[in-house]
Amino acid sequence: MMRLLPFLSFLVICMTTTHVLDAQPWLLDSPVITTPELRAWRNARILPVASSLNEHSIHSYFNTCPESPDGRYVLYFSSSAANGEKGDLRIMERATGVERTLVTNLTAEDAHRVACQQWIAGGRMVAYHDFRDGLWIVAAVDIESGRERILATDRQLGFGAPAGEWVPVYGCHWKPGKHRNLELINVTTGTIKPAVLASDVLAKYGQEVVRMVGEGDISLFFPVMSPDGKRVMFKVSRGTDTDNFRARKASKREGKFVYDLAAQRFIGFYERWGHPAWTPDSTGILEKGIRIYDLNTSTIRRHAVGSPSNHQSVSPDGRLYVADSDIARRETGKPGEWGIIVGSLETNEFTTIHRFMNRDGARSWRKPDPHPVFSADGKRVYFNISDGGFTRLYVATIAAIPAR
Image (cartoon, rainbow, N blue to C red):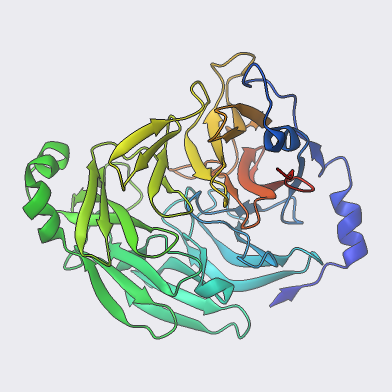
């Protein structure tokens, strides 16, 4: 199914004042900005990704980039439902503006991560999950043939490494049943293999687990694989056995456990989740407060002290980070206002490249956040904005990364 938007029409639409946004004044900055990359990001050009003004277009999470690894397409969840919880997966070709629907009529747990849609297998496929016919399924679609493959049932999808072919899955956190472990599925062959056992987590961290979520059966929740596909971080969950998955107290989910898949051993445990993201070399984890946990040295490094941060991720070259944050209580911030912040992990400088109202959009029980993330070449940052009646995906672009 395709929607063809003529290239010239696309350019006209994108160049209207309704669609083009100059980066907003850079308040919430470091006192002095000397980093060339940050100066470039101050002049970023900001555009919506999808052409429609009357639909949600939602990027799933800051642990995955909506732009394909080769830079050709942008992936998003499109919905006309007020709550943004039912819709389609679409891709837009960046060079032409052509939009194509990959999968229709998906049901999401919420609008916060929608279908957990993500590029996989080097960009040949898109993986996602869906509540279909009363059961959760994990699936992948080949973007050229349009063929969908059901990979697992009664599980949900974590986030894999886009260059690899394996995605992590887990049992439904509110009612996991027999699916209490983390598993890996090969999107090409359909092979399923165990990755981390809940019993092994309890054997090593039993006291910590009881302290965080109480006694009783647990399941492993929300795995995020490292860029090299060799490590995974996840939470533990204690479900309530409810059938209502759209409830904040459907389960208790805590902790951050880090596991080496190749060596089959735990390499880290932290009680705070902190909205973590992997560093591009797979050796560190960035979290709120712009702290990097170095897994090789077991040390914590603090960067850009004072920078706003809520969801944050690292640039492909490891030099910058991007974060979103509620800035209502900072400087000239207004109630409901958020910002997109780009900062240096080398000079500890940061700058707010865009600020916007973010209190409307999809009326889901768990609302979407901006969830900013860099493109594979480091020249673009994608993020959601929830203003007015819709949550829409935007992209901030710089012409080039300054040479060093």
